[in-house]
Image (cartoon, rainbow, N blue to C red; front, top):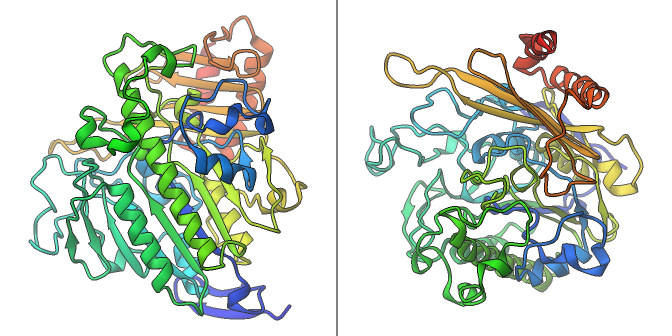
Length: 501
Ligand code: CA
């Protein structure tokens, strides 16, 4: 193997263990927003029997079902801090939130909560090593700034507080093709800013529109270079109120007449909640994503590049959809929120199978870089799981960290510059664990669920009655907090809680 050397100012020298650019795999990374792991019909099929202890949602996902048979399917992948922006920060940088700058969801009232400009992203590395990088869809990794290309000195809309954002070229981290926005939730009325900063309002269902743009990218790409294309669909994220505004009629038709008693299969769902009927719209958009994801696979096959393209299907977090009696769809340690789909197809290189490896959000970047033969930049905190993927051999993480942060006290201007690290936890190969604080940092609650015996997490094991288990989980948590240089470690928050018990 001949080493190839690339120079990039931000990264220094990268050594690539590849002979030819065309031998390096392309990457298509598709991540709809709020797509929960159980919303995949294949979990109930015989090939996946026993991989989950819970039942699959009664959804139609035929393309993902077929894809799963060709992919490495992770049954316990998690979204470390299950919110849009923190996930994106970790995926892009391989760093935990405090290091990459995105601690909570990006919006104008949190002026410092944004992707550190100096963070080296997966796209920076791949671009520097010759990849053509493209980003389509929801970015939500930047604080909204008053930089509307059509109205300089103003936010991109008059909404207050502002959530949406325009990302100028100098903040795109190596993505040379751009068709994106910050955060905006009208599925039939999306908008985007393109590579040149021109705004587009296509008045088309966003998943269909972004799929067409992605196919356009694949057809017009530079065929001398490998590509890295991210497609960040917003559905099945809310809103779910009005099917005519939020769904495609052909997909909604599959669910609209089905009784809730058929649609809710999870034993922890409270169907008396006001959002209960929204499950029809949610599942409709799951099916829309499935169908359009299939169109992307078809395009790869048509071009004959399916064999040399790593395709990932995942999500930024899940959706509780009335489970655990909460209206909050995410930002909780419960399976419906914390677990995410993660399917990776790399024909001839990675054997299709189910694996229960505890993959965290920060592990994605180093793993994908390694699979392309790229160096992993300094500062990355995630693990390179590529050898586990390729050979099944290698050290398996004992746990995956869970983080929940909320606003700290507002400043005199009403803006939030501090955050409060309200909960930390873990998933292990058997247990889900969380310690939550009160505002005075005293213990508020401990959650311990035995996911093997209690897959719907109906019985919180009392930590006082399961002291040895609790102590073991605390030891693991302490290790993970130290590894991730978390504020709970720096400020001895866990130790202080344990001293009180
Ligand atoms: Ca999200």
